[in-house]
Image 1 (tube, rainbow, N blue to C red):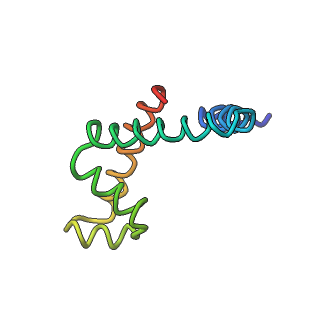
Image 2 (image 1 turned 90 degrees about the vertical axis):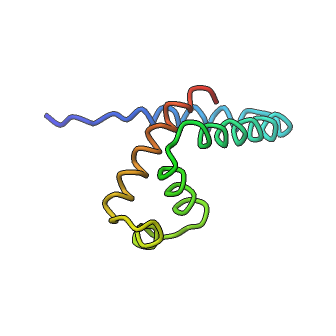
Length: 97
């Protein structure tokens, strides 16, 4: 018997896609601005300094893990750990979006 591993993200992504599709354009931009504002606040107040740096370098500046490790003077595995912890902390905040 095969079992399928369920992920919380699967249902959230499907619901968000439907919700976004059925929403008028004005509400989409309003919702997007609110989400961006809340996400910026979450990054500012919920993450450690190293997590913020890793998230900024990785997602906003599109740097590789190796580049980030060199810039910050840490090992690549440590960068991965900071990224994972940051994503976990931000997922907790997603309920407010």
